[in-house]
Length: 141
Length: 171
Length: 124
Image (tube, each protein chain N blue to C red):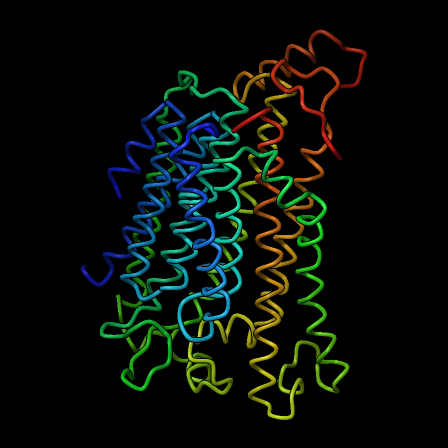
């Protein structure tokens, strides 16, 4: 499958747009359907598509294991860090109103970082799961 | 959708089962759009039809692709399922009717969510990240834990592995 | 009757998932049945949130009636957690396949019995 020329070329054409769409879903999630969960899954889907067309080993060079594992943990840490930031600014845990002088802007900021954390963890976990299954099955999947 | 489910029960070739479950997920996503749940539909289409199909196929690649002939007659499970179904249908007639604005689900906390005090137009995002932030933190932790558990399960290879699995684990 | 039609669909999907889980011995098929059961729960949550004439819960000056956003939030997270647990179940199936050489429940149980019968002294 990883030697199919048509798939490789189309995959290379499509993957930037898939990733761009994921970023759109991530940052436009306040105004339309979307958010961290969806964006994380779409990022992972784009990279899994890359791994399917170019082989898992190539994908592991582009997105190495240590990066995926760091993403896995850092997403949760970003989320929890937003909560701690609320504490530091004198509010409750996960209280976004204190993150900015304007409470509404504080809410926006809190939601933004929380969604970033969610997307990071979700895409990391999905990619890691795929890597684990694919590397078990040998040379290609 | 019912056809997809029935075929799914009867088919023994696991490859067709997985493809059918992907079709089923897409149908479910269209139903969710019709029910106004656009965020959920988006997630279902990308997760249910995309990622989990790939994962099931990956697992299938590691396992046998044909289900064994059923040893037992399915009458006992069928009876259990059907009686459960009958009870649930009987119970469902006590629930509010479809689209009833006076149902309890629309009364308690939702009017406050709809006041839009975070000024984020997508209420789903606002509730997800702000009002129910603890909840989502817990969910993210669950996803992280599942990933960690999966790494723990699949990282070490066995000493005697079948041929075709010759690549070294870089762990 | 028609007011409760959506619940009947939900119950049908739930029963189908339950039947697959109980009656089929193949572990991967059991997991597929489990995900069908899960989607029936999604429907059970989402359907009461729908209002006739309502629109998706994205605030806009053109609309006044919105469907209930709370079940959407709950199910959104449930889907992602569901795929994570599905992956965990598949990983267990793969490990079972490596240890036993099969993912059929009957054969696994039969092999367990053989091992127990062969070695009475050894703890299994």
